[in-house]
Length: 193
Image (cartoon, rainbow, N blue to C red; front, side):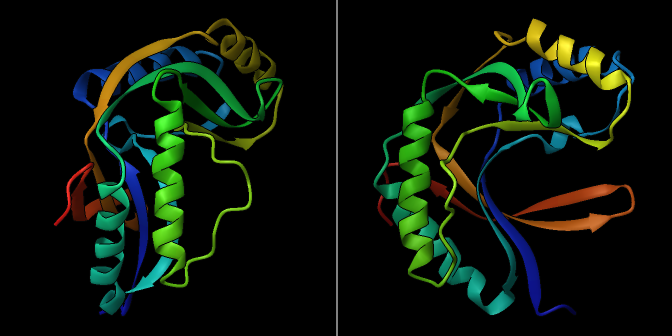
């Protein structure tokens, strides 16, 4: 058995937001670009990727996440606007962004960074931009122009809102068929243990 587990901290989606995000993926697929699309059941907002974590450290990680979430009250997050990194004209990672609730996601991320850095996890140096990854471009090609056009056409796409009341520590096991995520711990926002 492995003594380390690939771990990340995320916000889960409601079924309705997941369905609306999947509808957008179906539209973007019509560009026929070489993209590895995320399976709808795996869609989530990543708050912090921790990489491989020793199994014996998982309880400490879950405790740190609980302390971080206690400092933030539950809020509504609007899942809004198709885009890409580095940008829609040169898409590499395709995503849906955040509208209302973006500032609270930033606050939640900052709280997690503080608590997890105390355990030795490196802080992110880039500005945190909440996003729901829809897919990653595997190979550039002529179809990327069409994908870029579709992203611009859907820059105001709304997938609805999700109540952010809980944060989940997930393990990620990479399989041939795709990643398998398993919840290792859950923390409620605004609640002390």
